[in-house]
Length: 201
Image (cartoon, rainbow, N blue to C red):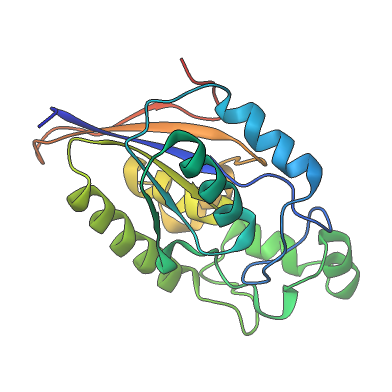
């Protein structure tokens, strides 16, 4: 078994309909979104397994890439995006027009100012933590690609870096961004963020 588990985190590309709070809305990738993700992975072929959110904007590309690389694919329900409640399907401008202070409060402290009818951020954190620990246990010593959402990637990074939950929005995770984590098999060893929003070497 390898000494390290390496996990690459790839956010989906631009979906049809552009930038908005879509959470559980299952929009497919736009043609531009496909291009963004293809450019992000390039000719890289080192992954042993691909793991994906079940939502189309992640799973369609993950399925195509797994077929191209002849690589196993696992769809994990728990890696879906946070549910945005009453903001689902709305753009930032639309939310701002309805309640100019709501976004600022949510970005500043999503625990104290949750989205009405949305998934509480602390519940989202627990869900992602459970899925992440299961991934590390199942794929210990392997090199895997996780295709997921901006919120999922932020929460995984939060846990790796031991950031407060209320500070997750300080992490940028643009469309088709790629980050890498390296986790030692020794649980006492510090995990490492190798790069964030970087390029494959």
